[in-house]
Image 1: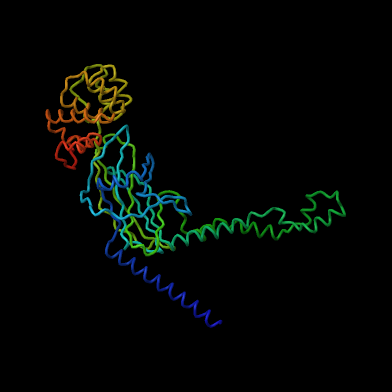
Image 2: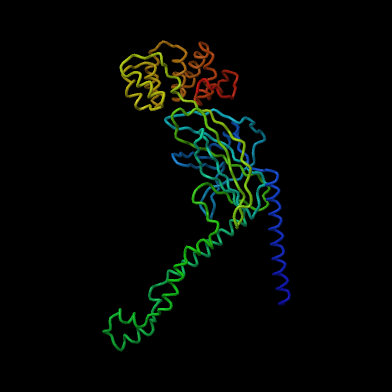
Length: 420
């Protein structure tokens, strides 16, 4: 029986070493081949399919993302998903997005093939935004293997057991039986005297010593802590599936923001630390449009009007409206639109000569209020007068949706930098 036990123990150690060797070789191949998770833009079909199941976060500081289909992790309570990609893949590396009320929304897909996954690994992905020389780190995404997660949870369980062992009743440190026997003979003896006389000082010292090592043991047991930020997904071993994550993000705009880039860093980790770094992804560029670029600088009426225009161009819409509202002109209406006062803007615009820029703003105000037919008519008039508004429509999602729904123009999904 003893020989059999030794044999089984040796076999388990051998298989464990073999498994470690295999995953190590796999990691080296990944590093040598320069494999990485990919970033790509979701197709319209994918947005429609997964958009209702994903949420949106705002991030004045590093923000978060949401998964395509939500599944709650029993252990962590966090949401996760595992999905297959649609067959269509966008090869474009840029997309138009827009600024609304000081915020910019954008989305992307993070895709990790099954070749990057292993039960003993945790994949960590770090999306980063680049604004020229400035950067903003978004919340990371973690894809955790089954064995890795089990080891994490075991570490937490062992540390919890240790903490419970420190939380005993203080009476444990006194010889309670002798205290009770002494109290029966001398009932007037103060408790402090009894506790001092019958104290288990060695137990107190031992417990204090263990308590002093609490943080050291925390690091030992929980060498790979559960992430306190970011998004986690617990994978299953041998799933053979791609991991697909729909990341939706809102960030505050910046003065003069016309475009920004998104890149992805990452690494493979096991219970001992970093196994290998993943190659950086090819970046995605987002071109940011703002309604403030539609301001009519020729309407300078003296006084502090120029200051109001400057505030409008710098996207300080509250200040711009305070200055320009009394004029009741095109730029006043534009300020109202920038602050989402769409009916008020329309009331001003409808009294003006229907030039191309006025029709365009009317189309936008109608679209936001669900007046699709009126919006369609106004964007058609604007394009008839000045063809460039056909391309401007790609930069404003409210109008772009009207153009798609009514199939007004041949659609070109590219940025029109002259409008940014």
